[in-house]
Image (tube, rainbow, N blue to C red; front, side, top):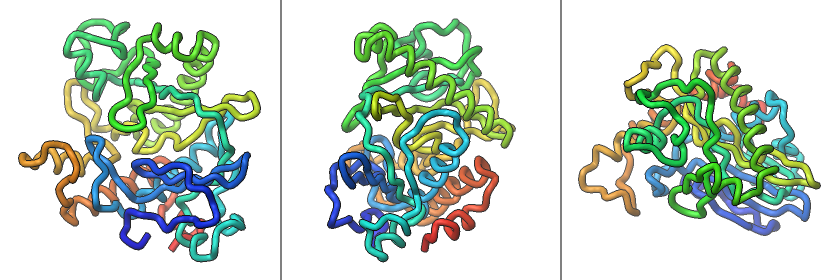
Amino acid sequence: MADGCRLIPVPVLDHIGSGKVRELYRVDNYRLLMVASDRISAFDVVLGEAIPHKGQVLTGLSLDWFSILDTPHHLISADTSGMEFLTPELQAEYAGRAMLVQAAEVIPMECVIRGYLYGSSWNEYSSGGGPTTEHLPNGLQLASRLDEPIFTPATKAESGHDENLTEAQARSFVGDALYEELKSRSLDIYRQGAEHAAERGIILADTKFEFGIVENQIVLIDEVLTPDSSRYWPADAWEPGATMPSFDKQPVRDWLEAQPSWDKTPPAPVLPPEVVQETSDRYIDAYERLTGKVFADYLDDMGAR
């Protein structure tokens, strides 16, 4: 990545999408290439600075989870040396950050699972309730553990924030049968992930999944259980009623929040090098804690620079 944020493009493939973090290419009618950059966003604004190794952490964690989870998924391969449509330069550039996946018909609903009351759900709950908290009892605190994880689907937004759906809205949106299947599948994956994380001293507070349809089968797509799609806390720091430290871009958010002159519209202020490094370290720490593996070994195994 010449400037740290923009990936070298693949000239022989059809570039079909560019998100806050990922680039998506069509390989053929059945396969897509998904590549995670080191871009980072906060408050729905993509920043100008890259977070070193962030895209490789997201990809590496997704690969590890895909190998653990008992659920159909879209991953075909992450070995760039076997991707004949990439030049040797691009095979090295994309090593550790690219996934060859099945092309799926995307189900346009975010499947959010919350095991703890935090973030937007806490804001909603403490303000009187709404779609994500309508079934919760009174008297809960910030970061309270819920008796049972809850399914709080949302519409997928092309830009800006997703919109939370009530159960009735979600059922109307995708139909009763698909709603029940997505809810059951999401809760099961969350429980698998939470159990695995707990064994490593980490709380999986909440997460979101995306699903698609391949040959009439519902499969898990996109990234899974990464610090960008999930809220992870150190278990030994958990305290109901307290603000929790998380394994993600919290240093970036905290620093931006402390800039009184920024109104959360582009362009964002330039991040100091120490904030960039702290955030990179936090992502790598999440990888190593969750996988039990050394991140440098992952880079070596994938043939990354």
